[in-house]
Image 1 (cartoon, rainbow, N blue to C red):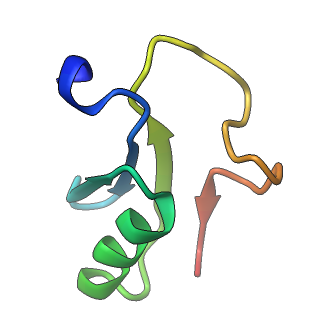
Image 2 (tube, rainbow, N blue to C red; image 1 turned 90 degrees about the vertical axis):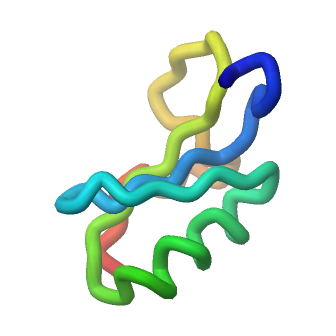
Length: 65
């Protein structure tokens, strides 16, 4: 999977495990938000690096929005 989707955003709804991937994090987030408007969501990137917070603005990885 990493070969085809390197550095794509992976957005996961925590209770169901539903997920969306997209090269654009906001697009992936909106895909999940449409299905789960009140859910907690986590975002990750598909790559080999492990860093504390991959969001460029330093925003939290988990949201209640």
